[in-house]
Image (tube, rainbow, N blue to C red):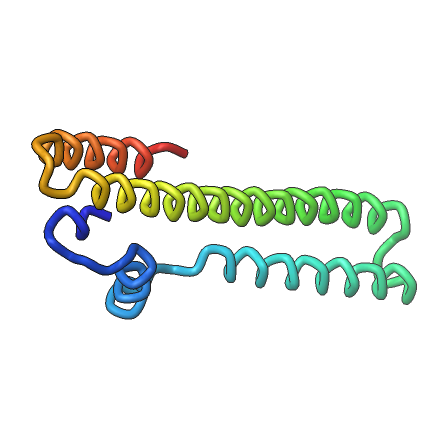
Length: 130
């Protein structure tokens, strides 16, 4: 984020791609989606066991209800994760564009130094907001 203030002239997107190539992060969304698939498979197997009388119906129905509640919670977690990431990405891209435009307008102006400092504080604040 602060690369542009250190003299990097490209965009945040290019820096983001470089970071993703060089510093791999765990893909929590992929893990959650895999858990959802496993939960759905477990529910399907439990239903088959109930139909084949391997599990008592009343006990099986209670287990299915609990498993479906956990599944809905995981799906909700994925939705909030994706919407939060999308929202923050859009905000950061818009802020990057706005700060670049303002910097180009006031280039070689006495206000350029304080404007860069203000821009850095905006980046810091946006980075730590949830």
